[in-house]
Length: 326
Image 1: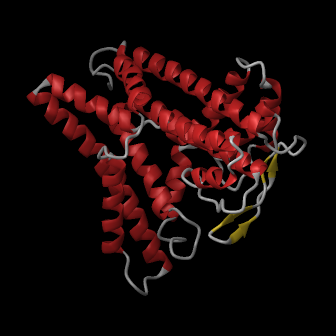
Image 2: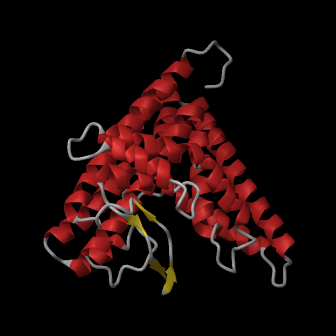
Image 3: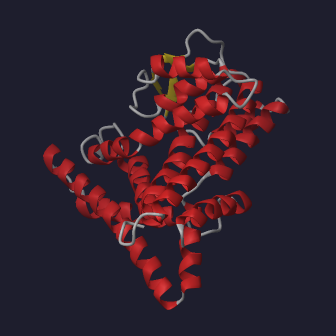
């Protein structure tokens, strides 16, 4: 399917269907392959170098396998029936996007806060963040929500569209494999410090450009909303984007902090362990419910900007001479 049609069609399908739990999502299959690969490659008493090599091999293997398996499956289906091949390609493109699901999850947290139901808001926030939420108050719930909206806009919306525009569904699925590897083994704890190091660095590399494009997207989106502040989004991004421990997460988070005039970052608790971090937008007040609502609208605007840019890039590529990469 021509990517000029594929990308907006995948977005439309995502808006209509979201991410139903009953659907056999490819990420679950990728996760199963990662788990089995880890079981096969990890051995008791492995040296640090051996752990790193094993983890790097698993990471490379899963990404390459995902890319070529996706390409082969779509190609085989299309050889049998162009309509079936196009339908399968569209379904896979849909599963790589998480725009509607992200907005729905965020809206459910906001709804609970609207009714002053903190226990429910904490429970719903826990579905989309890794930090402990059991004792968070309203401002910290809003902070967690805004931070995950910013980061997820990058790796759940902009990055898949970016890679789909450049290399089609196989490249988008390869990115999802990288993202899944990082979430499963790319941790800094003792168990995965060496085994998951290659996965973590690969994820940093894959998200380098999308994270910065997302930050720019928030700045442009802020110029479309009268409640947001595009100039301060730019200033805060340039000043605070590198303060996050992640080389990428701080890019969109700092931009949205400036756009909303809220203070993000700071201490979080993960599994009972306090993790300290620098602030972004230190001069601004703590996040509030009205700001969280604006953040959801900013993400919607960034999604549309990314959709438009991705479709434009795909259409320009489709005009390349015969024999160029499709």
